[in-house]
Length: 394
Ligand SMILES: *Cc1c(COP(=O)(O)O)cnc(C)c1O
Image (cartoon, rainbow, N blue to C red; front, top):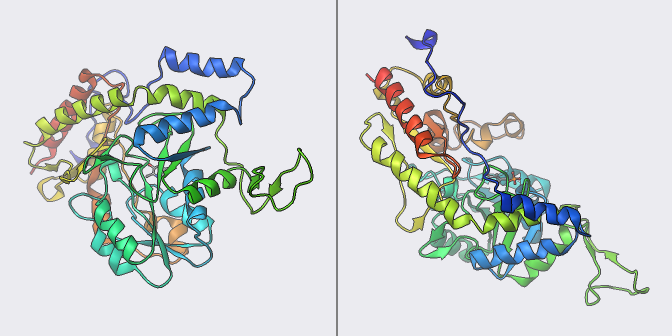
C-alpha cells in the first residue's frame, strides 16, 4: 500500500494528456510555403489572420510568434506601463501575468470561484485601485469567464479587458464566439491547444487603434504607412516610432494554422464527445468532482480535470497521480498558482493570498483529452481512474 504500491500499465503505450493532430492537408499547406517566395512577411500571414477573425467574429486579428508575445502586445496596446496594476487569476499559465511584468506593470491576483475555477468577478472588484488599468481574465480549461460582469466592472472603472482565451478557441458565451467580445482576446496555437501552428498566437479585436498598435509592436515599432510617417525621405523610407519587438509569425506557421482552422469544429466535437464519456462514468464516482459548467458559457474543452475529495481517499493527490502515470495514463496538473512560483515569491507575493486557487491546486488532476485520441484511449483512462479510486477509497 501507499508509496510502495506499483501499478501494472493498463495499456502498452503512454497516452499523453494533449497532442496535435496533423494530416496530409496540413503537410501540403506547409510544403507549398516552403516552395514559394515568402517564408516570412508574406501573404499567408494575413490569410490566417482573416480566417481567425472571421471564425471568431472579430473585425481584426494580428498574428504573433506565440501566445505570450501576443499577450505582451495586448498589454502594450492597452497602455500598460510602469507601476500600472493589472488584475488576473492565479490559476493559469505564467504567461497571463508575465506579460504585465514585461511592461513594468504589477500583476494583482484575484482569487477564483470555487465552482467554475475561473476568476471571481466579486474578487476583481475588491482589487481595483486608482492604479488599475486592465483585467486579464482567463477562460480556464475552455470555459468562458463571466464576461458580462467583467465587462461591466471594466466599463465602470475605465479598464481594458484582455481576455486570455488560450484554452477557449471555439467556445461561446451567451451564444457569441469568444474572441468577439472583449477589448482584445488572445489565442495560442501551441501544439496542445485546439489548433496548432507549431508556435503561434493571435490577438483579435474590434478596435482599430489597438489593431494598428499591435501590428507595429510586433515588428520593432516600425511603420511604412505614409499617413503615420513624421518625415518622408523616399520610397525606401520607414520609421521606428516606439520600441517594439520582432514577434512576427512566419508564413510556414500561418499556412499550418490556416489549414488547421478548417478542422476546428470537428476537433471540438471530438473533445465534447470524449468529455461526455468521462462525465457519464465519473458522475457516479463519489470520491471525485467533475467539471462544473456555468449556464452562460459553452466550453470548447481544452482540459478535462477531476477534483479529488481527499477526505474520502486514503491516498494523496500525488500518490493517485503517480498511480495513473504508472498505468501509462498521461496525467498532468493545471496549474501551480502563479503567485506561488519562486520568482513571484521573490517579488513579494505570498501563500494565502488566493486560498481557493491554492486549495484547488492541491486536489486536481488533468486527464488526457485531445481530438486525435480514440474511444479506446478514453476507456483506458476511465478504467485506470476507476480502479485507482476504488483501491484508495475509504
Ligand atoms: C498556452 C497558454 C499561454 C501562452 O501561449 P504560448 O503560445 O505557449 O506562448 C498563455 N495563457 C494560457 C492560459 C495558456 O494556456
